[in-house]
Image 1 (cartoon, rainbow, N blue to C red):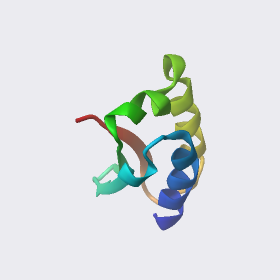
Image 2: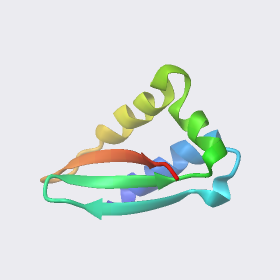
Image 3: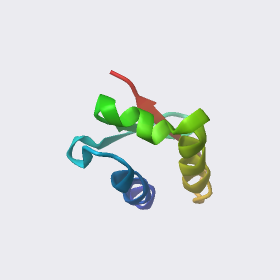
Image 4: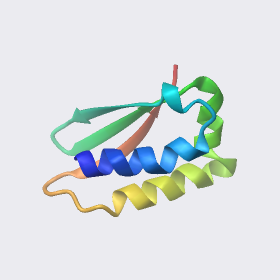
Length: 79
């Protein structure tokens, strides 16, 4: 779990203008291991990208990390 969180931080921090506001909350559900990104509202568009391409690329990298028994899900929390 810690490896995935570090991977998300390594990918997302250089893309945002307010890296101090980045927090990741992990929610363990029966089927998924959900990583909730809490960002500054001005950075949400930077992470989503044009037509969602940036978040799709981030998700494909994160989802390729093997996790035993559960699927990984990356969620952007909106305020």
